[in-house]
Length: 114
Length: 109
Picture 1: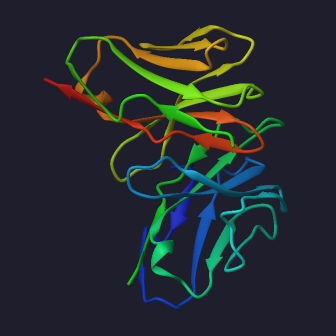
Picture 2 (picture 1 turned 60 degrees about the vertical axis):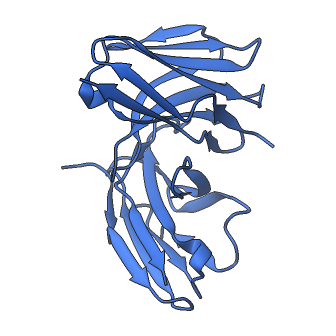
């Protein structure tokens, strides 16, 4: 399967702990996106990369959140000092080309903060 | 701010009937819209897209209609099948991608 993969699929953590998620995009895709999705809602944009450059960040992305894509391939999303409000599904998507509109999503990482 | 929203949170249709899912958007500068399908426990899956210079686009069993005058788009699914049961999202471009809240489609066998 050459689709977008995310790891882990599920993460349970205690409030105040740090967590890190990984996304492996489709290999030839130059754009990579992170979204957050809560129950009953559509995905909310967090940030995106074109190759290794982080080009856009949502105001939803507080100082506790950081994302990297060091070599323009896989990406990590870290949440520091997790809060219960961070509980959500974190989705990664990738796309190819100048517009990057046709995004392919991974299965997501479900985070539960207790 | 920019937003897209769906008129109905749930829709039930009989197998074999046609389904219509509607979406309204606020950003008149959006130049691209996409419909996604999301099944339980999975990420959204691309269905069909349309650029703002088009009124209609057809795919396999799906048609998207765009009415820029009233900022409305719809997804029509022909001969709806049980496998079409999912949550459907419209998304539009602005500075970023904006997703609606979704319509849950249930197909009754």
